[in-house]
Image (cartoon, rainbow, N blue to C red):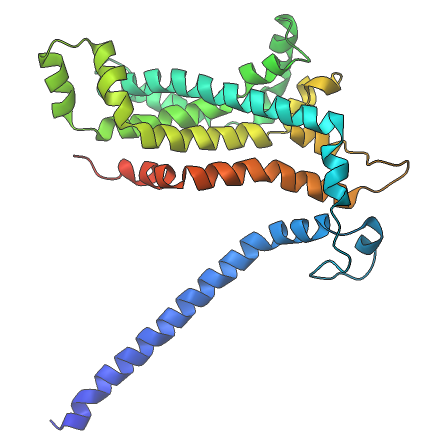
Length: 291
């Protein structure tokens, strides 16, 4: 066999690898553009004047202005909604992590009858749409006297954040080595001491990951927030406040101000992801391998 014949398969293989890489990176770029373009368009629109929004579309503002952000941040109803969202989302995360950590430790580390069935019940709770329980939840919130207050949302949001938290944390507790827990018990630690002094700190990446996802879910939730705070504007969260945004002058179509408000609302989530990005990556991969 000649040297020329031996080189042809290698050349063809290298050419196929180059084409594969080009196709792969082209697909990645397409996905990134498809995902980020709505965010870019909202950001672009937030720096435009109202008149420019009704002109032919442009990918950059012709007259860069910050007046939309000034109008949004000077709106007392919107700033109050920001505070309400932070308070409601933070309380929801705290409640979900406290209850979810206890439940996940029991389901992941303790042996008792019906554990598997309970796990599937927790998973099944995530399959029901929010609106399917809205009428019953509305009756409960009204009956206990918290309708129209942020407390109604704090008590309601764990219904869809807690099952996810329990399911994810359970897999992390299962993935921890048995030797750690056995060593703690041999040293005289109780189950509760083993849980909060040894096992819980080891699941910190998982707690950050699930906590952040719960925060995002509570921060962006609209259906319950609208239903339970419709008659009390002072208790509304930012999704409801943006949906009912009326602008600064009568009969104004506040498209640019709505876009600016959306950017202000998105900013805290971006900051949280950047600050905790290492924890998030560790949390997403920590339960993948046991041992």
